[in-house]
Amino acid sequence: MTNATSSAPEVTFGDICGDVKDPPIAPSSGGRRAEIVMTVSDPDLALLARFQETGDAEAFGEIVRRYAAAVYATCHRILHDPGSAEDAAQETFYRLMTRPHRVTASLGGWLHRAATRLALDIQRSDAARRRREAAYEATQALDATSWAEVAPQLDASLAALPDDVREILVRHFLRGESQADLAAELGTSPATLSRRMKLAVEMLREQMNCRGVSVAPVLLFNLLMQNGPTATTVGLKAALGKLQLYCAAKNGVRPFSWAEAFRSLPQSIHAARWAIAAALLSLLMSTLFTTAVRQIDWRPARPSAAPVEAEKPKAVATSHRPGRQEAYGIAGEIAPMIK
Image: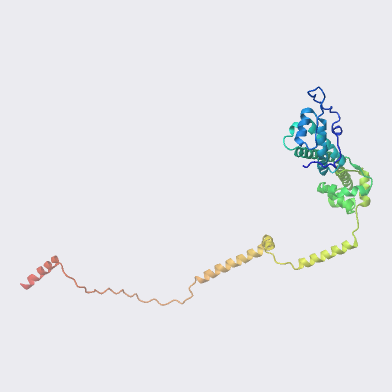
């Protein structure tokens, strides 16, 4: 934070803290009282140290003169209110006067930080106060006496009611259906429906009271009867007619959708279950009949022939070289014949 220029408004020490006593004057060696000399070129921390040690009002006044405009500007940027900014600036310098020992480095930085925190505290306090005032005003219900005061909260109050209660109120007051027709449709007596209607109006009145609109039950009933059904405009009727034509044309030619086909598949199967069962039964009978026909041999029978004996295999001459024992046997058989 820079030092305030000479054009800044003069704020004296008395304006900030008028109850501070005059600083003591140290006696000189010759017994005469010596004045404390201060120049405008003294550093901020030197002025603050002089004020802290001796209570020098002129030193503190010089600090105020240097930083009053800057501190006020900081508070005004946050609060956007001259009166609140002045209060925050005065509180900032009061804290500097009572707590000078907390400034250890930059006096300008400390003042800026202190002014910012004070201004933010005031801003939060004002915001909380405004919220409390708004909440209090919201709890104070408006005594409604006309339809213009009731109408803004009517639909929101109706939407907060249970479905059955909201239905009879909408059909009777907003659509104009008579209580006799409603009683016949709901299967109840007109007297019972009248009691339900009174209870529904009372519940609607409580909902409107929660929204800050207080209205007597009889007055609410009369206002609903007088201002309920409303005729549509010519332009709206024409627009709705065009919308109906568009829907009819769109439903006439509908593009194929796999998702819609899969969704409707169970319903289609259930609707055609008997036809599907008959088709499956016919297919099964056809399969069984075809299988049975294929197993029949349709060729004519042939005469049986005499059995043919199997030919014996012919001996195949093979070269055989007799062994020693076999040679001896053959020689023994031939010997008697030679004799």
